[in-house]
Length: 191
Ligand SMILES: N[C@@H](CCC(=O)N[C@@H](CS)C(=O)NCC(=O)O)C(=O)O
Figure 1 (spheres, rainbow, N blue to C red):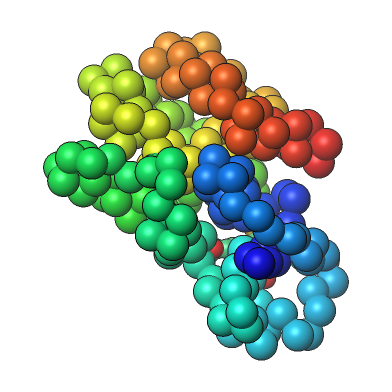
Figure 2: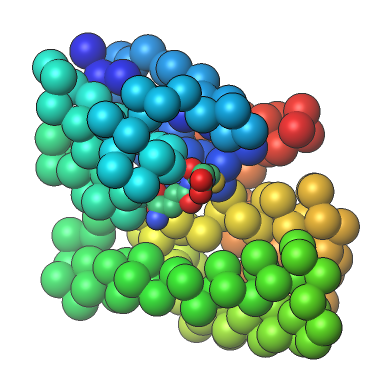
């Protein structure tokens, strides 16, 4: 059975929770207190961070790598597009995710000018979603899952207004129709 070393408040863990829920994978979760991490977590991941998944004493950290691993290990309900160009687009968006989270975390820290930089990132996502319905192109999948935990936290925990970004807002409505994503909105509400 798959074990997920998890933290409710962690958006990187949320990526993995959503993939697990979409694929209906049987799993157990071990909640890690991020304010008082157990020393043994460093045996699972040298950086001490979550998420980490474990299967038969084999461990894997890094949410983007875990998502791809789960996609290959549990191919049912595919979450990468069949079309090679769209697969590449999904991977590119995941690869460049740090450009989005940089301003997000700067805004959370209250850095001067971060609101404008984060608004720029939301504009970029909005423009992309005006062109194609999902961040991976034609179909819902890993690229959407890679971003939505931060969008939910920006809206529900940081009070960022999404109305100025109509395509992004509409994307979020479509995502929240999915039980795996709706469950994450509940997690954010409980933080
Ligand atoms: N690149 C990692 C980032 C994971 C990460 O930053 N996790 C945070 C919680 S959201 C963590 O464990 N922080 C503890 C720490 O940095 O000491 C991933 O994608 O999994």
